[in-house]
Amino acid sequence: MTHLPLNFIWFNLLGVLLTGYGILDGFDLGVGILHLFAKEDKERRIFLNSIGPLWDGNEVWLVTFAGALFAAFPNAYALAFSGFYLLIMLILCCLIFRAVSIEFRSKQEAKIWRHFWDLGFCASSTAATFLFGMIVGHLFIGIPVGPSMEFTGRLPNLLKLFPVLTGLLAISAAALHGSIFLYLKTEGDLRSKVRSWIWNTYTLFLCFYMVTTIVTLIKVPTAIVNLQKYPALWVVVVLNVVAIATIPRMLILKKPGWAFVASMCTLSALAALFGIAMYPNLIVSSVSPAYNLDIFNAASSPATLAIMLTVACLGLPFVLAYTFVVYWVFHGKVELGKFSY
Image 1 (cartoon, rainbow, N blue to C red):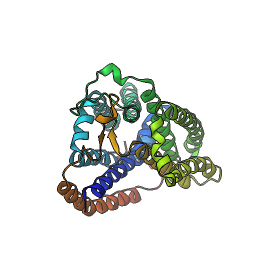
Image 2: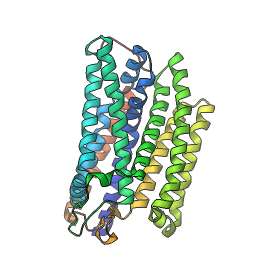
Image 3: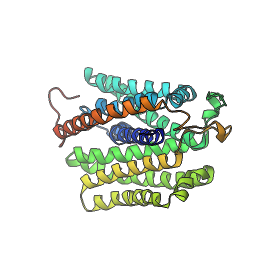
Image 4: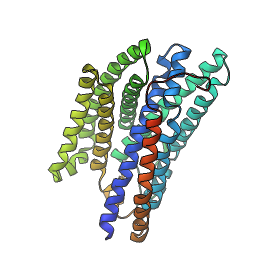
């Protein structure tokens, strides 16, 4: 196998890993974003237990993505972790504090104790989602990269309007995804309450989606270059719009499971559109296009990519099988028990 197909395959495999993380950890981040909207302690416990057996496994997809990026495109990995060092460290702090909040909340019954960890869980989930979205925005518009593939910017350069907008879009998307998941896992009055949240988060997501799309076309005109070059890729745009439109239709038809599938398809299509807009670049330089890191100048050797592909082909089916089994075992409504959060 030549170098070009290997580079292309690994670009797509990274997309699969990132999409898997967005879908799986997206809903439990969304649950965290919505956590404080539940007013009663029992409702908040139900929220925590809906993701309790799943959230830590979901984050493995992010770790796997980082490891695959390091092995397949080490130059891009090094630049990303230096250019986005502060944002990545803040994300790690948020994910750690989020995990601590989940585990510590039920250690004491005191209201002030539980309120503190409830606030920590919601704030860390929201902040992590926002920061993920900001990184995506910066990848779109580019960061200062010099001829030696090194980050040449400063922290204030990271605080721009477009990344803030993509961060808000990420929050709205996660909240929508999480609210549909909660609708599947809850019963009774709480389920009715969550249903109203779905419509609110859907409206919010739709607004941010349209605004972000318009701003992207104005701010990053190169985002549609590959769509113009390969017209067949417009099918992804169509599928994205269809998936977004299917969510309310399935809710009206009282098919929440299909609404959740539509939400997953929406996130998958958004990830695919991001990949289409970026290809073949991994990191865009705002200094000069000549300094972009792409799937060619940032890649490992052909031998490394080939060996890793073999390992991935052997290991990925086990990961998918494990994920399926876990979700099958813990499917159904949430029931609070003696050992619940």
